Image (cartoon, rainbow, N blue to C red; front, top):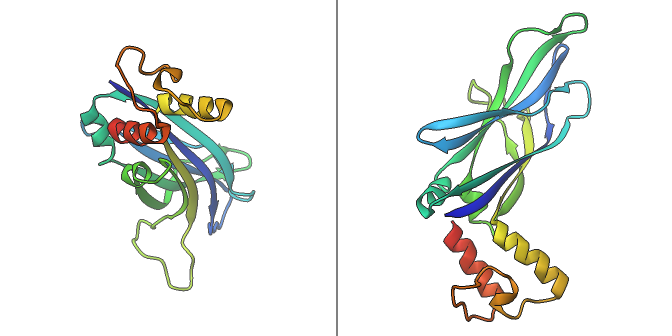
Length: 193
């Protein structure tokens, strides 16, 4: 079994225009395999305020090499949504989709540090945006962490450079004999994915 931590951050939005009172939030969907997915919502923020969330979500995943390889084939779907509010009545009805984007986990897994941060353009449900209008965008960050690697990074920073496998504590009875920490990190990351 391999254990991973999958992290998603919803940072901020830009190029969002509103005509009435309301709140803005990001809905995102994570695949759980077997054609199922988890729906998560960021907190709702006033459409009139600064469009900052700075929220993060972390999911600990454990599975076989096949299930980890399956993660690379999945995408996270992000939806920028707006909900009308009334100063007296509060929230009114359901939310309205302003735009949608998909980010494949593969881009995260294949990045040098297993992480990425970028602005994703939200494609409106009607499919296109007039040339003179900038489409809404949401800044997101995604990371994949292998706990053993994270623990070794802390030890590496604390002790300088790991010199022997038995210093990390991960190969007590496995007979590891390699001495180069950087090669171990690369191999461990590739095997975990």
